[in-house]
Amino acid sequence: MSYVLAGYGVSFVVLGGYAVRVIRRGRALARALPPEPSPPAWP
Amino acid sequence: MTSTASRGTRVIGALALVGLVVTVVMGLTLPLTEEQLEYSRLIAIHPAIAWCAYLAFFVTALGSALYLWKSTRAPLWDHVAVASAEVGVVFTALTLVTGSIWGRPTWGVWWVWDARLTTTALMFVLYLGYLAVRRVPAAPDVRATRAAVVGLLAAVVVPINHYTVEWWRTLHQGESLAPGTLDGRFKVAMLVGFLAMTLAYAWLLVHRMRVERLEERLESEGLDLAIAERQAEAVAP
Image 1 (cartoon, rainbow over the protein chains, first blue to last red):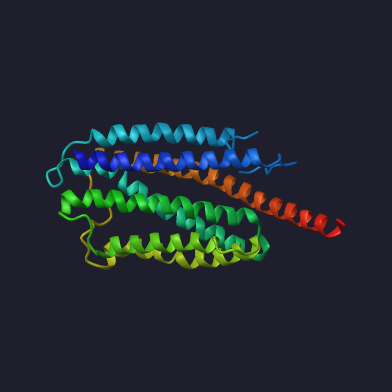
Image 2 (cartoon, each protein chain N blue to C red):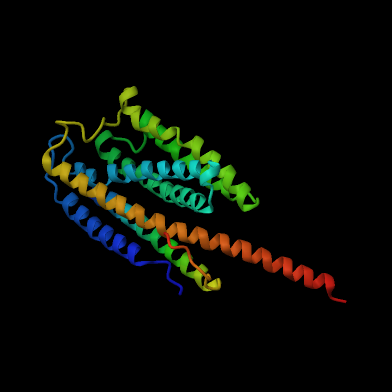
């Protein structure tokens, strides 16, 4: 069972860690930049 | 506003989260099999992660093609391509790691130079190369054009990787969803995993695209500021 748990564990830790990294980078950039006059409608 | 989320991404994110929880519960409660005992429970995540890697690189190729095509050329397609490539590299790394974890108890080895594994490793290295090309200093349009060419060429490895199990004799199993290969419960768990991981990919893609757009703005506004400072220095007595 340890291999199965390792597979699930690694996948979710890596995906979660990457998601947090992307969010934090986005927030830091948004704080550093003045608001856009007309932000794009998409995405 | 410091958040890069929107109502749409929040909905996708919530659905992905629910889907991933359901995938874990379904995957970890799958019955033991005669051939692989409990190790077959990895079927709920490993093929889904690999599918997301394929999808990501297809989207990179599509974004690259739309950027290179004169009538559709727009920074948006470059942002789609780079965001998808980076997310794809994460999914490919996870494909290699989860595959290796599955391989150890069932094949007896962590790694073997099998056609499927080798082309997956090649795909990983190619897209790391794509991300490296983007870091070579250049004007944004030059960088985007170079990267788009690499993004299109690298995509050749994706269908080769997919068909390796049919074209060559490999240790890696054949197509998982082929008729008669899987019991119903395994098939459902696998399909739920596909759906959840695809939603997670979409959520990551949109957020990463927004980061790319903000980085490009920071780069161009930083450059404008540096030029203005130089000009002020030049006119100062």
